[in-house]
Figure 1 (tube, rainbow, N blue to C red):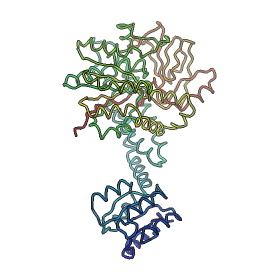
Figure 2: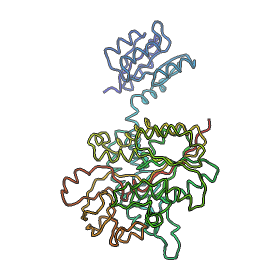
Figure 3: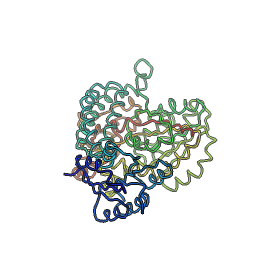
Amino acid sequence: MTNGLLLWVDDEIELLKAHIIFLEKKGYEVVTVSNGADAIDQFRTQTFDLVLLDEQMPGLSGLETLQKLKEIQPATPIVMVTKSEEEDIMNQAIGSKIADYLIKPVNPSQILLTLKKNIHRKEIVTEVTQSGYQQEYQQLAMQISDCRTFNDWAEVYKRLVKWELELSSTDSNMTEMLTMQKEDANNGFAKYIAKHYLDWVAPTNGKGKTDNSRPLMSPDIFKKQVFPTIDEGNKVFLIVVDNLRFDQWRILSEELAELYDIDEKLYMTIIPTATQYARNAIFSGLMPAQIAKMYPELWVDEDEEEGKNLNEGPLIQTQIDRFRRHDKFSYHKINNSSGAEKFMQQLKNLEQNDLNVLVVNFIDMLSHARTEMKMIRELASDESAYRSLTLSWFRHSVLADVFRELSRSNYKIILTTDHGSIRTVKPVKIIGDRNTNTNLRYKLGKNLNYNPKEVFVIKDPRQAQLPVPNLSTTYVFATGNDFFAYPNNYNYYVSYYKDTFQHGGISIEEMVVPLITLTPKKR
């Protein structure tokens, strides 16, 4: 079996016999021609894995031949080989999308390296990535079992995402192994939340003071991140992308790295990991029960038909007022293309503000559309495809335009989200009355019937600073990749919602989310 079929084009091909013999011994089949016209004829009759093309030849030049070859087989990598080091020639070759550029005299090792980069890259990357994950598997398993603090879990999650991104970019057969390790991590994380969460969010801890051991959480974002950044003399642009997971952020970060210096943190959302609770907590700086008590006109209960996030601007104002600040701010939300265009038209006029807040709902809309629409589910069939669709949207979205525009400004940009999401797999039965909410990852209501071993339960919502619509209201949360299903029409319900992206419950993907500071690079 050959390692690849090569075409070598050089008017002095007889001088390269030693190189050709070397390549043949390495398992390559080499076809040689001495001019561009013959190279074009060969291209019309055979499919090559790579072309080595001399830049200086009589008749058709290397650059002219390159153009003709690209018209016939656009995907075939072409390596330019030349004596010239003129910048103009290099630019023309690179602009014609050559795979590599070698300066004569070339040695066999150089040629072998370019072949590995352009023909065997995928296999080599897969092999090295798999080997790396295998070596780290046991260490990562021990790290998961040793997690005691939020920072421990954040570091574990970063490593899991790193390997998920690397393995998904290869033809690896180890993704199932990683999936199992993520499940182990989520099992441990759910126990961690069950042990500590109520202590973190309880109004007092028994000594009359709040728990100082809690991680940075949703109500802390303005107090500990936004306001201090303003106080340092910066104008701040806060961008909240609804339902942005950390792995999705990592993909988007590659698009922003050329424009910004990136300071990456993770924080923990409150539960339920749903927009109504988590985003309102960010903007108000309060837990949901506090919002309902202090600003009842700005809080909407689960059973009310009114939109749950229509008061975000006023909630920001309440927080500014409570801290006796005088920051001038604006609030904007983008739900569709017309809203995006309108926002871009007024972007320049926002420079006078101390703080501008932008909410972008697309990823959350995508997540819900994937559940409801078969076509979207096909397009985002798995985690990798879901990330790819997110990246494709971003590249062509108004948000990318916003980032490009802001990179030319003096803003400090804080990019975050209200919660993430998880791909649900395992149904968990629950029974509730007709007033029970419809979310698949959390339920609240009276007389809920469930298996307490399968869920996380808050029987007294006041302990978690959650609203209490009725005296007997209980909050029940799915953990890991579980989702709630009713016994009625159970099989239909399960088949419809299995393998969908949901949020509201307890998992690393939903609760450990990005908090990013972007500083425009000085040019």
